[in-house]
Length: 454
Image (tube, rainbow, N blue to C red; front, side, top):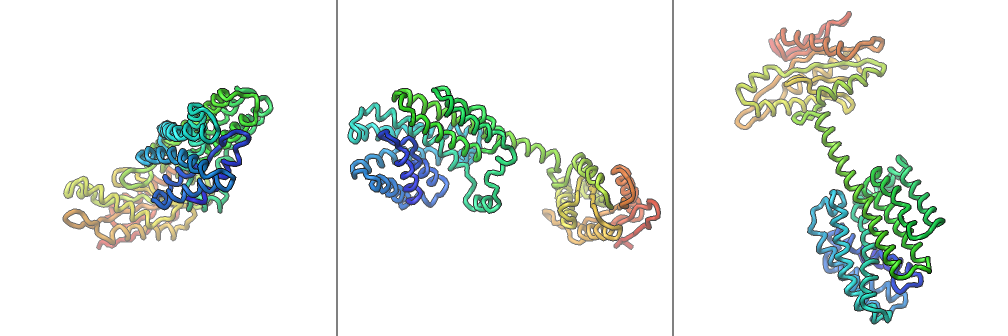
């Protein structure tokens, strides 16, 4: 905490240009970010370290003790206000993931800036011979811009351990490589802002930033908004003909520009999460986690377009209706869940498992021989039958009947044909007494009858 705040304060000190106060002061936002992201730093020792970092930076750069203490006091008023407000908000809001995150963060930043400005109103006449109201307005606006531009980056950044892993894979900003358009647009707008100039130039970056909010997740968008804010604040500070009122107005505009793309990024994040949830619900059975019938057919059809041998298993739980009638539907659901888990345990990660009907499952396995396919089917049959399923008051044993069909590498069979062949073999297994594996009698393929019932 002490080192981070000290380093950030030095950046702020050297960003003062010729004005009395820093145009960009990251130290306070860094301190708030650490207090919220690293709970250990919110202990008294962490607060003390932050205070020492602020005072040390001012003293090292030539400020008097009075100036260092007054400025630190004003800074701490803002830091404490935002921390006390923001830590009470829901976790999704604190991590900049909820749709209302940026609005609540913006209000928190304004409140923190207001409290810091009260300290600024006291410090401005004592340190810079200025008017208290002038000091209050300058601090309010400047602190709001600092917090609103910096805190989203600190709060939405991946945890340190994950960040290290992303850095090792050079994947921190992989979204920029996948979708370079918004980034290029922002660079072009930055150049246009410098070349054209004028008060309206601060809005040149808005289309690119909104594009970024739609394309990128919150953290990359926050990084781009921060870079844009630093660029605009720097340009504003370098222009000598702007009056103080104009500078304040321009900085308020910069803060509002920062909010818009981040609010859009939060909304898009939640929109994408909802879409992912709906797709999960549409593609996978909520009870057994097997693929739904439609999704299985879609994936299996794609697999069959590839060359090579492909096998299909049709699996049916024996006497499942009796289980429902005897033990109830809750017990039946438990049996389905347990059976699906055991089937999945016998498969590879690339194999497809779908729930085709009530108690009927289908499996598609590519790149296997007939012997290997039959071995998998037998392993599934044994796994389901081997262990009794524990219900609330007793345990029951469940068996399966399995039909098997295989497409040889030189054959061109549709999924429907393979499923129909496996289904016929499944009914043959039922006819022969259940709890067995039967290979489809297609072509010259022999029929395999494996059973534990005699």
